[in-house]
Length: 566
Image 1: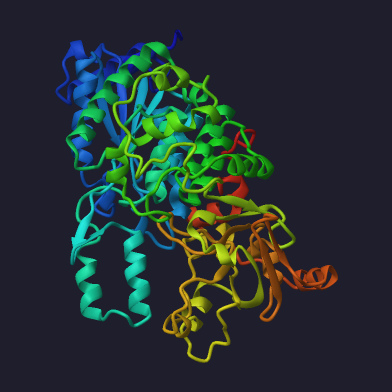
Image 2: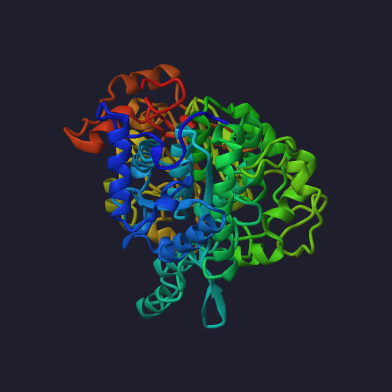
């Protein structure tokens, strides 16, 4: 165990007089009504993220109270503290732009304040990766607690859950199949409880990944937000944080190359969010770990899809929890996993998976010999249009479009897309390939704009899917034949910037490639004319534009990655 002082003596403010600093800190702590006996105990920080702009975190006060209860019962002093909170749909231009800000806030507050371990409470899409990034860099003993998924609503006998069903209904509305009164009624039935999206979107994917990494307690990823067991899990998380004070198990002990590969296996097996690829790269990058595209594709070709949840299947997260959750899934994947990884409790994965499991619902969680798909839900692409890689969610795409060649219909940015996508005069056919440029990290903060809508005139004619290509992301709750995260992005002069209307593009999932069928000399000529966007003059947006990396490096800041300039 380290000789570093515990509790409130940890990291004293330096006034040039150690005893005075200790006296002053304890005096101000006493002003909060804390007894001298409690002041002598270890301190567990609780990074809490409530916000009136974050519906996923509405029950945060209850979770904080339960964590505090566990910390106190285990003999330590809980100290909740706020950090940035990112409510996915309430942020402009995109929550992705502020993930790194939250990660910086989390890292700095863990390091600056006197705590011996920390509980990280988050849920909404970017909050969990931001907390894990910050914790990995701070490397203080830490444990993750997620807020949990929503429960489903009902509409005319149909179960509804945010946000895959919202996209399905919106597509019907755009196609003219339902009217404004019906879409308004559905609006009030999609998100009916606190918690994260009810499907295997980004939030739930990251919750499953946090558990797989070993950063959250076994069995806690999928507990619904409104379930009593969510509070029980919070209390036990508080107890675990106290045990971490003695064990000194740090994030760098838990997040390793092997546990990252295990997390990728789970991502592929659940048909999870494409966003998780970027987030995992950022978390791993904080510890100097990088998984090559070739290795990602090896894992994908070896790992079957076993979980039948929306957006790639039929069930919801509450069904996954009732079906056996992560415990059941990991036991099925056991032959494919690194079993010598450890979790925050200090247990190896093989020890955990040796414990008996009461029951598994095989409708929701398939066995390894009876998969939904023999290969993983995601695949990485390369080619002359994406020399540094792109991502395709094959589990949520139309198989008949996996091998496609089509004419490019190009949108130069988000405003151009909004202005022209529903223009009746738009020159577009069902077999065309929609291309969105300048929506990557440098150009636009990499919003979830990769889910380009089907042009209205085609939607009204019954077209439900088309190949779409961009340097943007898409929501983990979305579906379609969509090539995302094209790197390098158009704004930094990547080949995507060279695409023009009428060019031919070839997509081959079999070959894991995406290519622009234009002569190399002509591509170079076009790219020589490219001019990067201007950098904002001030503030965080200026820092972001000057420092953000491309998608394969997790869109982290260059000075925050392992080995970056500090």
